[in-house]
Image (cartoon, rainbow, N blue to C red):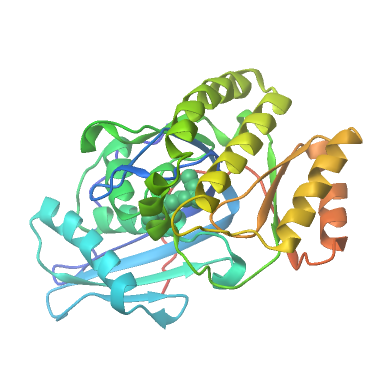
Length: 341
Ligand code: DP6
C-alpha cells in the first residue's frame, strides 16, 4: 500500500520542483456520465487495471518569476481549453498549499499521442502527484486520488497500481479510488489493438455530459452496480470468465449509451467491429479472450498468459490493426528522480 507522500526535497528556495510517473488504466466497468459535472463525481463506481506499458512522466516546477503556467506535452505547448484545464488543476493544488507561484509543466507519454490511448488518466495522476510533491503538500493516497479526479475522473484510479475501484459519492470527499489487489495478484493481460490513431472527434469530457440524454443511461447505471459486485468476486477468486463477461457487457452498455445520446456518439469503426467479432469467435474456439473499448475505436483484448503471445500475433495479422501494445497490471503512481525535461 502506498504511503503518504513525504515533503520533498525542494530544489531551492527560488523553485519548487518534483517529477512523478503514472500508468494509464483500462476500465473493466466504465466511468461514463457524472453525478456532479463540476466536481467530476462519476455517476457510478468503476473498476480498472492500471497498466504497466503506457505511462506518463511529468515534471512540475513552481517559480516566482513565471507570469503564467507553461505546459508542454510530448514537446508541444498546450494552449486554449487544454491549457486552462491543467492550469485550473494546478490552482486547486496551489490553493491547498497557499502558494501563488505559476508552474512550468513538462509531460511525456511513452506511447504515441495519437495511439488512441487516453493520456488524461496517467497525465492527471502524474501531474497531481508531481505538483503536490513540489508544493510540499503531505497528502494521503486517498486525498491524491480525490484531487486527481478533479482533473480527470479516470486519473483518480491511476494513482494506484494493480486492480482499482473508484467510488462515486454524494460529496467530493466520498468519490475516491482505492486499490483492490496489487499488480502481482493476477497476471491479466490487456492487448491494445490500435485500429486508428486519429484524435477522437468528441473527447470523454464532452461525452460525459451527453450520457444523461440517452434513454439507456439510468438502466446502465443500475446494471453496473450488479456488474461491479460480480467483478469484485471475479477478482477475489481469479475467475477470468466472470471478469471478461462483466467487462465486455459494460463496454457494450457504455457504447449503447453513447450511440443513443443526443447527439449520438459512434466511436466504432469497421475495424473495431472486426476485432470484436474475432474475439467472440476465438472464445467459441476455446480461447479465453474478451474485449473492452473506451471512448474511441481501439479495442482492448483481455486475456491470460497462455494465450497472450499467440493472440498478439493473430491480432497484428487482422486487416486494419495497425499495432498491438501488450500490457500487464502495473504499479501505482510514484515520485521519480528522472526529470521529463
Ligand atoms: C470511456 O476520465 O477520460 O475511458 O474526467 O473528462 O477526463 P474526464 O473523463 P475520462 O473518462 C473516462 C472514460 C472512459 C471510461 C473509463 O476510463 O472509466
